[in-house]
Image 1 (tube, rainbow, N blue to C red):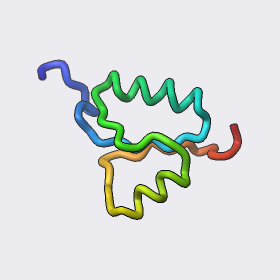
Image 2 (cartoon, rainbow, N blue to C red):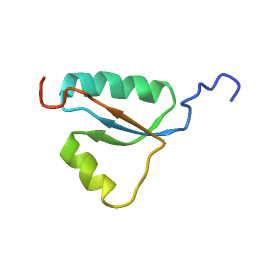
Image 3 (cartoon, rainbow, N blue to C red):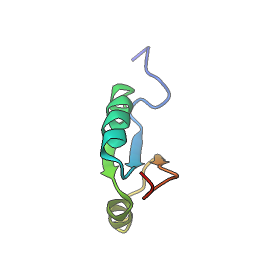
Length: 67
């Protein structure tokens, strides 16, 4: 794919507790070609991490719980 960006096909976990921000940024990441095996809040991310799955990138809201 000649026009693939640097994130094309990459595995990304997006940890965000604000639903509107999560939806908008998740859609953008998908448009960039990212694979999103996890989009959700911190509790879900911790549960998924416990299974030994490791993404290539974690995008983390630095203000979790403050929306």
